[in-house]
Length: 134
Picture 1 (tube, rainbow, N blue to C red):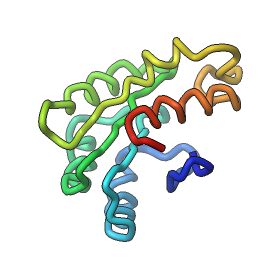
Picture 2 (picture 1 turned 180 degrees about the horizontal axis):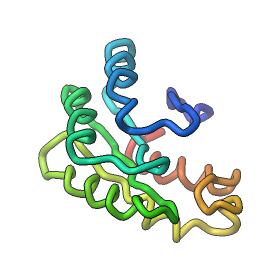
Picture 3 (picture 1 turned 90 degrees about the vertical axis):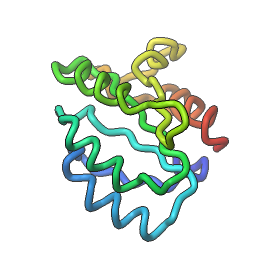
């Protein structure tokens, strides 16, 4: 993603609840026109946590929220919560990575079925680029 011009802020095993202060600082520092958020793979979250995060980015014109593709007990629930935040006319755009992942050609995932190979990373970046133009 960095090679395509995205500013990436990632951390190992980051949880959604930990993102509110991180996102507050990021939005203040960068003032983005478009923001991509991918969270929920590392654990469950609830509606209040997601709403708190989306409140922080409510002034960002375009917020792309990428849902979860993982064989984890919480993935489906997280995806429902994410889908419920996509309303016509608002600033949230949900990107259904769970559906797109099945379309990825070739060997796209390492053995855990979550982390991407180079082919998978390119496919993922292409799906984001369809919306962001990067």
